[in-house]
Length: 262
Image (cartoon, rainbow, N blue to C red; front, side, top):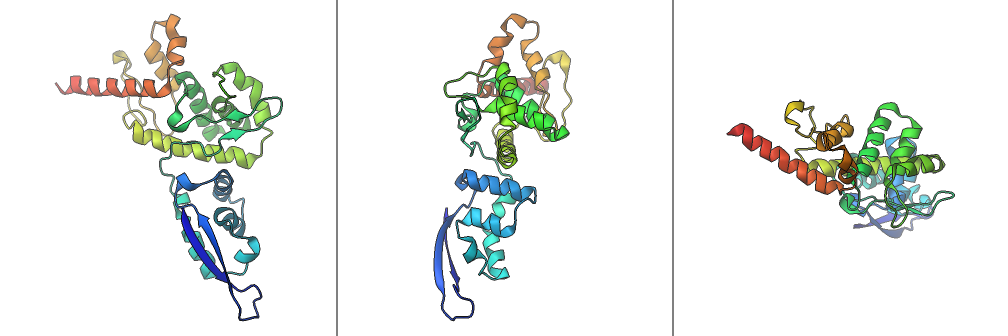
């Protein structure tokens, strides 16, 4: 966090000034839920500069309105980091309150506790929403991620809850989308052999896991590559922690690379 101080005139025509201090975020790790929503609104051009600065700085609107254009510009410069979607591994919006259901909680940092099956559904609905802009895909994406306390993921929960999720403020839902984009950047950093940014050709005959491009999410095919003919144990694969699966896939990539280079 960064502490800032602004000087302003309470009454513009009097030569007396006051000071106001505030703590402001310097990176994604400092951002609060309210600020994340403001950033998501800024991405959609759905918030004024003054309202954005109010949310980000904590300064009162009447103080911001007394600042000069140059002072507002310099204040806006502090938040340049929001234009750069750098890797971040936590959900900033930690819980959601929806009707007829307990409070729904976000996954832990670095997707701890998320199963491979849960990730397949969440990431697939996320990719679908990026393509279709269909609100049902958005709601099912969120329903795939947020669960009740000590609740295990099941596909039926998506169908049971996505309509309730759809009643949440759209700005909250868009903020979760933005947050997940940051998590995708973290995944690309943590597992670069899996989350490659360029399309990769898959050799199905060698049953190599498929590299995931940033424009698609072919997780069903990846899952089939793992399960193969072992259909009886497909639920066991789906129930494994997603980071365990990604570590296994990374190891396989490296083994295959060493074999090809011999």
